Structures are given as C-alpha cells and as structure tokens.
Image (cartoon, rainbow, N blue to C red; front, side, top):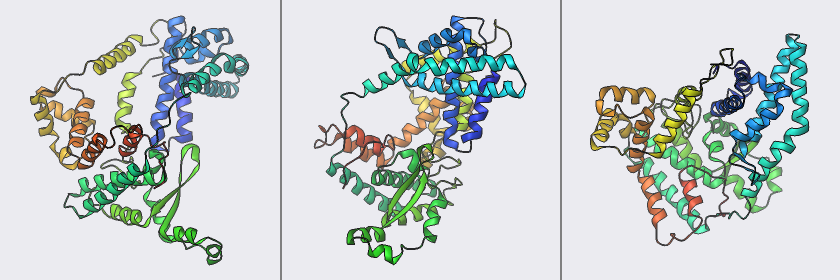
Length: 438
C-alpha cells in the first residue's frame, strides 16, 4: 500500500497508540477500510487514484456514494449491511483531511489548504444527516427486542467450583512447565473474568508488575477501617485490589480473592520453566503478547498481501484491483468449501509439529511453513490451515475443554437459554454479559 496520505494517517495512529501491542490490529483495520473506500471510489470514477482526491469538494457526492456502496447501503430499507463502517470511515476521513491540511500549511500550499477546508466544511454540515444518522439507526434498531441472556446462579456456581477444583489439580499434577503454565493460566484468567465480570481483553493484559505493587501496599488506615461495616472490613481483609488500564484509557479496578492471589503467585513462579518472557501474567510462550492475543507478526504479513494496492501516480494502473479481487474471492472460496483432512495429512502434521501438541501450544508461521516443506502431502495446505489443525487437536485433548462440552450437553441444562453466554465466558470469549452474583 503506497498511498502516501493513508500511510501518514497510519503513522499518526501508531504514534498515538502503537506502544500498545493489542492496538496494532485496529490500526491496520483502519487503513484497510480506507483502501476499500479507494477501490469503491475508483469503480465509480477511474480518474481517482489516491485518497487525496477524495477531499476535492467537487468529488463530495461521489465520496458519499462510495461510502454507501462499500458499507452496503439499501435505499429501500434505509439500512446498512455494515453499519459501523460508515461511522469509522467518517472519523478516518476527518482525521486524514486534517493531516493533509497540516501538511499543506507546512508546505505553504494554499490551493490544497483551501480544498481541504472546503471538504471539512461539507463534512461538518452534511455527513451526519446523510451518512451517520442512517448508520446509527441501523445499529439501534438491531438491538430492539433482543433478549438479554443471563446465566443462572447455580450454573455460575457450578463453573466456579469446577475452576477451583481444576486449579488445585493442575498445581499438583506432573505436567511439564509449558503445558502446566498454559492450562493454569487459562483457568485462572477465566476465574478472574467470571469473578470481576470484566472484558476478557482487560483481564488478560494484567502485568506482572501490577501484582508486584500489591506486595508494597500498606493496609488501610485504622481510622478508615473503623468507619466501615463488619462486612466491608471482612471484604478488605479477604480481597486484594489493583487498577489496570481499560477501554479508552479508563481506570479499571480488578479484585482478587486470597485463593486467586496464591494461584497468581504460583503461576508467576512457573514462568521460568515455561519460557515465558512476556510482561503480562497471562503471557504466551515465545511471544510478547497476552494469552488470547492474536499474533500480530503473522497477521500483519497476511494483511499486507491481502489488501495491497499501489499508488503509481497515474489513473490507469495505480490500483491493483485484480490482485485484491482474486485474493478476496479465494478467501471466500476457501471458507465456503473446506476440504477435509486426509489421514495422511493428519499424520504428517502431527509428526512434524509433535512438539506443539505435547506442549499444548500453537506453532508460528515459520514452523508451519517448514512442516510443509518437509511433508509433500501438506503442500496444498496453507500455514494458517496447519496452525488451525494443531489448535483443534490441542482442544480435543484438553480436559478443561471436555468439561465445557459435557457441561453444555448436560440434560439438566439443555433447555437453558443462557448457555450461549456461559459458553462464551468459559472459552474466554465475550464476557460482556453480567452473570448473577454467587
């Protein structure tokens, strides 16, 4: 991707939040959205070859049409297929316009400055009424009459008791360092999410130094303790509290019971034997990312080939539409027509990547590509497919996962509508639901 304005916009986003590893995927997503807009723009006018041309006031109506097209706007229903996309594109276009205006001021380019200011005036006057309103209405109406799924108290207690029991079993087990660390980290992370009702992304980014702060904290002042009720005093003595950074930089309190603290310190003591170098308590092996974080080094390589388009400075061959179209089509075909793994393929993958099956970890791109080179039978598989195969094999052999599957199939729980939300909690997925107190 060689559009200079989009790259400059990406640099600004990276300067703002690039130090937070989990934000890298969000930054690349914002750039891909602008790339899709340029492609839609060029389909309507082949003379358009870069984002800067979108900010010409004469192209305003064409820009609105391109945004509606890329977000799947339906004139009959007045709704978008992807209602969040126009809202995000609006923010990105506004920021890109300001970046271009700043550059024009620095270069003393009055023509570009005047053009961008005209665009920003049009954006301020018309974007909300003609784009954002319909997008937000689509989002709001989708929430109407949507049932709120809450787990029952007895189900939460059942899951809590299982986690407590399983954590004790893992501590006493003879598993090797890597396998023990990962299973204990998964169980403890689930317990913290369930107890605090926190977003999984917030809880998984607790750092080792955050727990170290607790050792240096002094007890509450006795005068303050005397003002508390007996129940509040007991809670102060039986729980620990830290503060971490949450969504939009907000301060998020996280509570730990005494049992959780003991398990956390035990988990920290296992880091050396498991070869964990991440600053996060729930870190991955051979990675700086948290347990549930996708490996950005791998996804970035894939994204760069997936959404590439080139600004060559002319309107004839500036955007590589063919490459994008073929890539997107091949992705859709691979998802729609999945090929079953043959016995030979399974044996080859297990043979080459037995180390990761034993450690219950996932191979990276380099390991998967090496397995392909060593086994001809795997030549038709992508490295992502090989990695997903290993992931599925790890899940099959996971006793914790087996419990969750049995839990879902229990005849006593079969008719509960809240099982879906409980599954999400158990699999470290969406923990936004608020379970009942237990």
